[in-house]
Length: 135
Length: 110
Image (cartoon, rainbow over all chains, first blue to last red; front, side):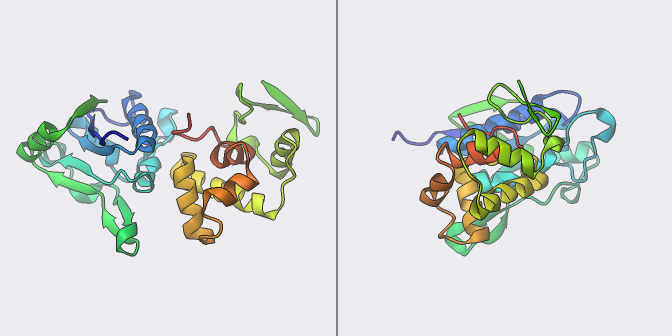
């Protein structure tokens, strides 16, 4: 098999109002089956995707945010959230879902999947990728 | 598409997956299995119930690789392997078991 490529899925939209979030998550889950090196980034209103205690009842849309908690099972365990985007929206890391994954090689220890990075760090991470997809 | 059971009509998609998750009950699962010449025993039910719980928690039907790993963790290594699961569900454990569980086709299943 050819070497795994580095994929980054960038989320730029809030969860409801458009289908970018739910469609993007579906593509991530599908591509995870192909054993590529996958990470996600959340910038701008995309940081709202990870907000905890979402309630979509009044929007008539399904609340798909619990599916983010399954990402660890799919071995997608690097979710970079831009610090400036959180701050601009009055959010902190405590407002986000506590997402974790279990490290099979470390006796199933639970480890955090969310990394808060600043704009410059994120820019470096984007630079490292082979393929970048925006949602 | 649709099928009838006990005087009630159940909507399905073109591959036979239940359109409304809330329509599901044990009789629906048994009927769908019967149509595939599959008699559900307690081992089948164990996987079907596991999938319903998984969907309830995560709002997605797991891909087969994820299902296998999660079953292994919950029910033990002798059940969390492809051989065991394919013997129960020869049409593909995630695909077939999700159908009987009334879930949509698994995400990441091509």
